[in-house]
Image 1 (cartoon, rainbow, N blue to C red):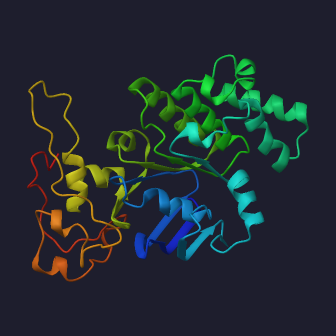
Image 2 (image 1 turned 60 degrees about the vertical axis):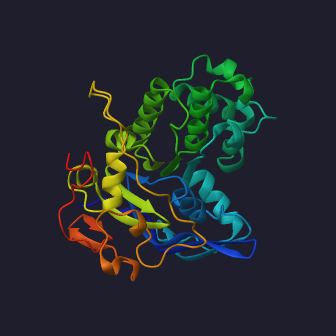
Image 3 (image 1 turned 90 degrees about the vertical axis):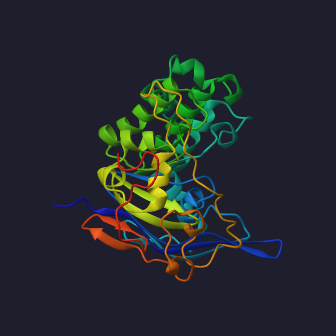
Length: 332
Protein backbone atom coordinates (compact mmCIF):
# COMPACT_ATOMS: atom_id res chain seq x y z
CA UNK A 1 0.00 0.00 0.00
CA UNK A 2 1.36 3.45 -0.96
CA UNK A 3 2.31 5.78 1.93
CA UNK A 4 -0.36 8.29 2.93
CA UNK A 5 -0.11 11.85 1.62
CA UNK A 6 0.98 14.24 4.37
CA UNK A 7 1.07 17.54 2.50
CA UNK A 8 -0.94 18.50 -0.57
CA UNK A 9 -1.02 21.79 -2.48
CA UNK A 10 -3.46 22.52 -5.29
CA UNK A 11 -3.32 25.51 -7.64
CA UNK A 12 -1.08 27.33 -5.18
CA UNK A 13 -0.42 30.87 -6.41
CA UNK A 14 1.67 33.57 -4.71
CA UNK A 15 1.79 37.18 -5.90
CA UNK A 16 3.48 40.26 -4.47
CA UNK A 17 2.52 43.86 -5.16
CA UNK A 18 5.55 46.13 -5.05
CA UNK A 19 6.04 49.62 -6.48
CA UNK A 20 2.87 49.31 -8.51
CA UNK A 21 3.91 45.99 -10.10
CA UNK A 22 2.58 42.50 -9.48
CA UNK A 23 5.30 39.85 -9.12
CA UNK A 24 4.01 36.37 -10.00
CA UNK A 25 6.29 34.36 -7.70
CA UNK A 26 4.35 31.07 -7.82
CA UNK A 27 1.68 30.16 -10.35
CA UNK A 28 -0.86 27.31 -10.05
CA UNK A 29 1.46 24.78 -8.43
CA UNK A 30 0.29 21.28 -7.45
CA UNK A 31 2.49 19.40 -4.98
CA UNK A 32 2.22 16.18 -2.96
CA UNK A 33 4.45 14.82 -0.19
CA UNK A 34 3.99 11.30 1.15
CA UNK A 35 4.95 10.00 4.58
CA UNK A 36 8.66 9.29 4.87
CA UNK A 37 9.70 10.40 1.39
CA UNK A 38 12.26 12.96 0.27
CA UNK A 39 10.90 15.37 -2.33
CA UNK A 40 13.41 17.71 -3.99
CA UNK A 41 12.43 21.08 -5.46
CA UNK A 42 15.02 22.25 -7.97
CA UNK A 43 15.45 25.35 -10.12
CA UNK A 44 17.55 28.46 -10.59
CA UNK A 45 17.54 31.23 -7.99
CA UNK A 46 14.33 33.22 -8.27
CA UNK A 47 12.27 30.34 -9.67
CA UNK A 48 9.81 30.45 -6.76
CA UNK A 49 11.01 27.48 -4.71
CA UNK A 50 11.30 29.22 -1.35
CA UNK A 51 8.21 31.42 -1.73
CA UNK A 52 6.12 28.37 -2.57
CA UNK A 53 7.06 26.67 0.70
CA UNK A 54 6.96 29.79 2.87
CA UNK A 55 3.45 30.49 1.62
CA UNK A 56 2.28 27.06 2.77
CA UNK A 57 3.10 28.00 6.36
CA UNK A 58 1.83 31.59 6.24
CA UNK A 59 5.35 33.05 6.25
CA UNK A 60 5.18 35.33 3.21
CA UNK A 61 5.58 39.11 3.42
CA UNK A 62 2.58 41.38 4.19
CA UNK A 63 2.38 42.54 0.55
CA UNK A 64 1.73 39.00 -0.66
CA UNK A 65 -1.46 37.43 -1.92
CA UNK A 66 -1.76 33.64 -1.65
CA UNK A 67 -4.47 31.63 -3.42
CA UNK A 68 -5.27 27.96 -3.83
CA UNK A 69 -5.27 25.19 -1.25
CA UNK A 70 -2.65 23.65 1.06
CA UNK A 71 -3.71 20.71 3.20
CA UNK A 72 -1.57 19.12 5.90
CA UNK A 73 -2.84 15.76 7.13
CA UNK A 74 -6.19 16.62 5.54
CA UNK A 75 -6.58 20.04 7.20
CA UNK A 76 -6.47 23.32 5.29
CA UNK A 77 -3.57 25.62 6.15
CA UNK A 78 -4.24 28.65 3.94
CA UNK A 79 -6.23 31.12 5.98
CA UNK A 80 -5.81 29.12 9.19
CA UNK A 81 -5.58 31.15 12.45
CA UNK A 82 -2.07 32.24 13.41
CA UNK A 83 -2.25 30.27 16.67
CA UNK A 84 -2.85 27.03 14.79
CA UNK A 85 -0.12 27.80 12.26
CA UNK A 86 2.36 28.43 15.09
CA UNK A 87 1.60 25.01 16.53
CA UNK A 88 2.04 23.32 13.15
CA UNK A 89 5.30 25.17 12.38
CA UNK A 90 6.88 24.02 15.63
CA UNK A 91 5.41 20.57 16.21
CA UNK A 92 4.45 19.20 12.80
CA UNK A 93 6.58 20.94 10.15
CA UNK A 94 10.16 21.93 10.89
CA UNK A 95 11.85 24.53 8.67
CA UNK A 96 15.58 24.95 8.05
CA UNK A 97 15.97 28.39 6.51
CA UNK A 98 18.55 29.30 3.87
CA UNK A 99 20.95 31.18 6.12
CA UNK A 100 21.34 29.79 9.64
CA UNK A 101 23.19 32.93 10.75
CA UNK A 102 20.07 35.01 10.15
CA UNK A 103 17.55 32.37 11.30
CA UNK A 104 19.29 31.90 14.66
CA UNK A 105 18.80 34.67 17.22
CA UNK A 106 22.21 36.30 17.82
CA UNK A 107 21.19 37.50 21.29
CA UNK A 108 20.20 34.10 22.72
CA UNK A 109 22.39 31.15 23.55
CA UNK A 110 22.05 27.97 21.54
CA UNK A 111 20.64 26.22 24.59
CA UNK A 112 17.86 28.76 25.10
CA UNK A 113 16.88 28.64 21.42
CA UNK A 114 16.66 24.84 21.43
CA UNK A 115 14.88 24.54 24.77
CA UNK A 116 12.25 27.24 24.17
CA UNK A 117 10.05 25.27 21.71
CA UNK A 118 10.19 22.25 24.03
CA UNK A 119 8.98 24.33 26.97
CA UNK A 120 6.25 26.06 24.94
CA UNK A 121 4.93 23.21 22.81
CA UNK A 122 5.78 20.11 24.84
CA UNK A 123 5.34 21.77 28.25
CA UNK A 124 8.67 20.47 29.54
CA UNK A 125 10.29 21.93 32.62
CA UNK A 126 13.52 23.90 32.38
CA UNK A 127 15.80 20.99 33.29
CA UNK A 128 14.00 18.45 31.09
CA UNK A 129 14.00 20.81 28.11
CA UNK A 130 17.71 21.50 28.54
CA UNK A 131 18.48 17.78 28.76
CA UNK A 132 16.50 17.05 25.59
CA UNK A 133 18.20 19.95 23.81
CA UNK A 134 21.61 18.48 24.68
CA UNK A 135 20.52 15.12 23.29
CA UNK A 136 19.35 16.77 20.07
CA UNK A 137 22.72 18.49 19.65
CA UNK A 138 24.36 15.12 20.18
CA UNK A 139 22.01 13.58 17.59
CA UNK A 140 23.21 16.04 14.94
CA UNK A 141 26.80 15.13 15.81
CA UNK A 142 27.85 18.33 17.56
CA UNK A 143 30.80 17.70 19.82
CA UNK A 144 30.73 18.82 23.46
CA UNK A 145 26.99 19.65 23.33
CA UNK A 146 26.86 20.85 26.95
CA UNK A 147 29.44 23.50 26.11
CA UNK A 148 27.67 24.48 22.88
CA UNK A 149 24.46 25.07 24.84
CA UNK A 150 26.15 28.07 26.49
CA UNK A 151 27.53 29.52 23.27
CA UNK A 152 26.02 32.01 20.82
CA UNK A 153 25.61 31.63 17.04
CA UNK A 154 28.58 33.86 16.18
CA UNK A 155 30.86 31.53 18.15
CA UNK A 156 30.08 28.57 15.86
CA UNK A 157 31.35 27.72 12.39
CA UNK A 158 29.00 27.83 9.41
CA UNK A 159 28.68 24.04 9.34
CA UNK A 160 27.96 23.90 13.06
CA UNK A 161 25.32 26.63 12.78
CA UNK A 162 23.64 24.60 10.04
CA UNK A 163 23.57 21.56 12.31
CA UNK A 164 22.05 23.67 15.09
CA UNK A 165 19.40 24.91 12.64
CA UNK A 166 18.57 21.29 11.75
CA UNK A 167 18.45 20.40 15.45
CA UNK A 168 16.01 23.25 16.10
CA UNK A 169 13.79 22.11 13.24
CA UNK A 170 13.75 18.52 14.55
CA UNK A 171 13.63 19.12 18.30
CA UNK A 172 9.84 18.75 18.59
CA UNK A 173 9.72 15.64 16.37
CA UNK A 174 7.97 17.05 13.28
CA UNK A 175 6.43 14.85 10.60
CA UNK A 176 7.89 17.05 7.83
CA UNK A 177 11.25 18.78 7.58
CA UNK A 178 11.65 21.54 4.99
CA UNK A 179 15.32 22.20 4.23
CA UNK A 180 15.84 25.32 2.11
CA UNK A 181 19.24 25.19 0.38
CA UNK A 182 20.81 23.45 3.41
CA UNK A 183 24.23 22.95 1.79
CA UNK A 184 24.73 26.36 0.17
CA UNK A 185 28.05 28.06 1.02
CA UNK A 186 29.36 25.00 2.87
CA UNK A 187 32.50 23.13 1.84
CA UNK A 188 32.07 19.64 0.38
CA UNK A 189 32.95 17.85 3.62
CA UNK A 190 30.37 19.76 5.64
CA UNK A 191 27.82 19.36 2.81
CA UNK A 192 28.21 15.60 3.08
CA UNK A 193 27.67 15.77 6.84
CA UNK A 194 24.51 17.87 6.47
CA UNK A 195 23.09 15.46 3.87
CA UNK A 196 23.87 12.59 6.21
CA UNK A 197 21.85 14.33 8.96
CA UNK A 198 18.85 14.71 6.64
CA UNK A 199 19.12 11.05 5.67
CA UNK A 200 19.24 10.07 9.36
CA UNK A 201 16.12 12.14 10.10
CA UNK A 202 14.28 10.29 7.38
CA UNK A 203 15.54 6.81 8.32
CA UNK A 204 15.60 7.06 12.13
CA UNK A 205 12.61 9.32 12.76
CA UNK A 206 10.50 8.60 9.66
CA UNK A 207 10.47 12.32 8.85
CA UNK A 208 9.36 13.31 5.36
CA UNK A 209 11.72 15.86 3.82
CA UNK A 210 11.22 18.64 1.27
CA UNK A 211 14.66 19.57 0.00
CA UNK A 212 14.98 22.90 -1.81
CA UNK A 213 18.14 23.12 -3.89
CA UNK A 214 19.72 24.05 -7.20
CA UNK A 215 22.36 21.32 -6.75
CA UNK A 216 21.49 18.24 -8.79
CA UNK A 217 24.26 16.28 -7.08
CA UNK A 218 22.47 16.73 -3.75
CA UNK A 219 19.25 15.50 -5.34
CA UNK A 220 20.89 12.38 -6.75
CA UNK A 221 22.18 11.47 -3.30
CA UNK A 222 19.07 12.02 -1.22
CA UNK A 223 15.76 12.43 -3.08
CA UNK A 224 13.02 9.98 -4.09
CA UNK A 225 11.11 12.37 -6.34
CA UNK A 226 11.92 15.71 -7.97
CA UNK A 227 9.85 18.75 -8.95
CA UNK A 228 11.61 21.09 -11.38
CA UNK A 229 10.52 24.76 -11.16
CA UNK A 230 10.97 27.57 -13.64
CA UNK A 231 9.49 31.08 -13.38
CA UNK A 232 7.07 30.08 -10.63
CA UNK A 233 5.70 26.94 -12.29
CA UNK A 234 6.52 23.25 -12.01
CA UNK A 235 7.68 22.24 -15.48
CA UNK A 236 8.63 18.61 -14.82
CA UNK A 237 8.13 16.13 -12.02
CA UNK A 238 9.16 12.52 -11.63
CA UNK A 239 11.37 10.07 -9.81
CA UNK A 240 15.11 10.75 -9.54
CA UNK A 241 15.64 8.19 -12.32
CA UNK A 242 13.09 9.96 -14.54
CA UNK A 243 14.73 13.35 -14.06
CA UNK A 244 18.31 12.16 -14.53
CA UNK A 245 17.90 9.50 -17.21
CA UNK A 246 14.51 10.07 -18.85
CA UNK A 247 14.15 13.84 -18.61
CA UNK A 248 11.60 15.30 -20.97
CA UNK A 249 11.69 19.06 -20.41
CA UNK A 250 14.33 21.26 -22.11
CA UNK A 251 14.91 23.25 -18.92
CA UNK A 252 15.71 20.07 -16.97
CA UNK A 253 18.14 19.11 -19.71
CA UNK A 254 19.74 22.56 -19.58
CA UNK A 255 20.19 22.33 -15.80
CA UNK A 256 21.88 18.96 -16.09
CA UNK A 257 24.09 20.08 -18.98
CA UNK A 258 25.37 22.98 -16.87
CA UNK A 259 26.92 20.63 -14.28
CA UNK A 260 30.70 20.50 -14.72
CA UNK A 261 32.11 17.02 -15.39
CA UNK A 262 34.83 16.64 -12.78
CA UNK A 263 35.73 13.17 -14.07
CA UNK A 264 36.96 14.66 -17.37
CA UNK A 265 40.61 15.68 -17.08
CA UNK A 266 40.35 17.88 -20.16
CA UNK A 267 39.74 21.61 -19.80
CA UNK A 268 36.18 21.60 -21.13
CA UNK A 269 34.13 24.82 -20.99
CA UNK A 270 31.06 25.08 -18.79
CA UNK A 271 27.76 24.86 -20.65
CA UNK A 272 25.59 27.80 -19.61
CA UNK A 273 21.86 28.20 -20.15
CA UNK A 274 21.43 30.93 -22.75
CA UNK A 275 19.75 34.16 -21.70
CA UNK A 276 18.42 35.02 -18.25
CA UNK A 277 15.46 33.93 -16.13
CA UNK A 278 12.43 36.15 -16.77
CA UNK A 279 11.35 39.11 -14.67
CA UNK A 280 8.45 37.63 -12.67
CA UNK A 281 6.57 40.92 -12.94
CA UNK A 282 6.67 40.60 -16.74
CA UNK A 283 6.69 36.88 -17.54
CA UNK A 284 6.69 36.23 -21.31
CA UNK A 285 3.46 35.03 -22.91
CA UNK A 286 3.19 31.31 -23.43
CA UNK A 287 5.89 29.07 -21.99
CA UNK A 288 8.18 31.23 -19.85
CA UNK A 289 11.23 29.20 -20.96
CA UNK A 290 10.67 29.64 -24.71
CA UNK A 291 13.07 32.62 -25.17
CA UNK A 292 15.92 30.41 -23.91
CA UNK A 293 14.80 27.08 -25.37
CA UNK A 294 16.56 25.38 -28.32
CA UNK A 295 13.45 23.24 -28.94
CA UNK A 296 10.87 26.05 -29.09
CA UNK A 297 7.95 25.71 -31.48
CA UNK A 298 5.70 28.34 -33.03
CA UNK A 299 3.03 27.73 -30.39
CA UNK A 300 5.41 28.16 -27.44
CA UNK A 301 4.97 31.93 -27.22
CA UNK A 302 1.19 31.66 -27.54
CA UNK A 303 0.03 29.24 -24.83
CA UNK A 304 1.23 27.89 -21.49
CA UNK A 305 1.83 24.14 -21.85
CA UNK A 306 -0.12 22.09 -19.29
CA UNK A 307 1.65 19.68 -16.96
CA UNK A 308 0.75 16.35 -18.53
CA UNK A 309 1.67 12.75 -17.76
CA UNK A 310 4.53 11.15 -19.66
CA UNK A 311 4.01 7.90 -17.77
CA UNK A 312 2.55 6.87 -14.42
CA UNK A 313 4.92 8.91 -12.22
CA UNK A 314 6.42 11.36 -14.70
CA UNK A 315 4.94 14.63 -16.00
CA UNK A 316 6.18 17.52 -18.12
CA UNK A 317 4.86 20.91 -19.24
CA UNK A 318 6.22 21.18 -22.78
CA UNK A 319 4.75 21.13 -26.30
CA UNK A 320 7.88 19.57 -27.82
CA UNK A 321 7.34 15.84 -28.27
CA UNK A 322 10.64 14.78 -29.81
CA UNK A 323 13.79 13.43 -28.21
CA UNK A 324 16.05 15.74 -26.23
CA UNK A 325 19.76 15.77 -26.86
CA UNK A 326 20.81 18.96 -28.65
CA UNK A 327 22.78 20.17 -25.62
CA UNK A 328 26.52 19.58 -25.42
CA UNK A 329 26.20 16.95 -22.71
CA UNK A 330 22.58 15.88 -23.14
CA UNK A 331 21.46 12.33 -23.24
CA UNK A 332 23.55 11.01 -20.34
